[in-house]
Length: 333
Image 1 (cartoon, rainbow, N blue to C red):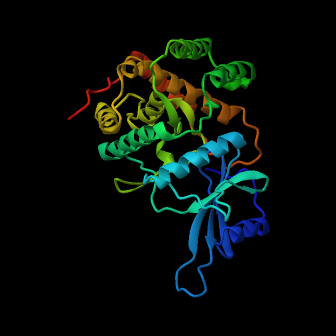
Image 2: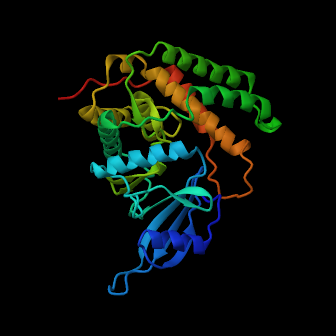
Image 3: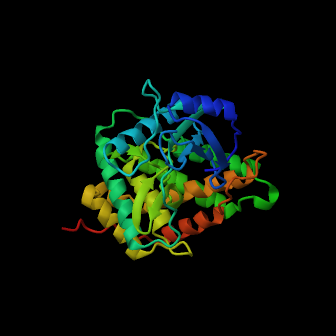
């Protein structure tokens, strides 16, 4: 979350009125994040009640396209309606939850109490594993599909762009270029020979800063704006690479096992997924290494509120994954 697009209070009030939310009291920019514009907004309580102002989150979708936004919105709505901890997106009288504001697709949901966990525990990882496993199982009935905008084609184009356009002080060494090319080649081979790897709707960005916890209780998984149709194992790898690591980038075996055990209580991983586990962890790390390089060095927005995440974090993680990974455990009884 961040702010790259300014909003007109009059236009926002018109949207709030269409949603039956009443009078806008205040807006506050949310500075953390790298892709979308996010605001906390307060709306007056109904005059007949003594309630405090109602609080909502407004998100303007800056990246992707209309089809991506429609897919991610529909997926989030289905998961929320099925009882998963996903924010309830507010719809207008026609049932539409994907709105338009300042020329951008916009979403509004009630603000949920909670915070991103700073010190990850096994309980946190079990919650994330259970959520992902349940989501992937439910996804079997999700009839819409949308290709991954940051999948294999994006990876190759992005690496070529990084090699050609990174400023001199940030240029990739020949060794780093070769390392990333190798991961793309390995993943291309996996895709070409990956028959049997389950595919379905994935969150594709289930990092700690896309969750809200109170203590060790998961209150919400947020930001489905990268959601797409891809290998379910890639979604698991993305989560493990963020949630189950030591500070130096190595995997923490206890956290990995906690997440995967909880996941497999909902959806046991298949033999072919187990066979491709290391390659998927490596490609996931390479993706986010490149993504962070683009964000830090090539994005040209004039606004300075973009959260700057260190690309070297994922370079280190990739190097550790190449040395070995924590194996997927057997399904526990």
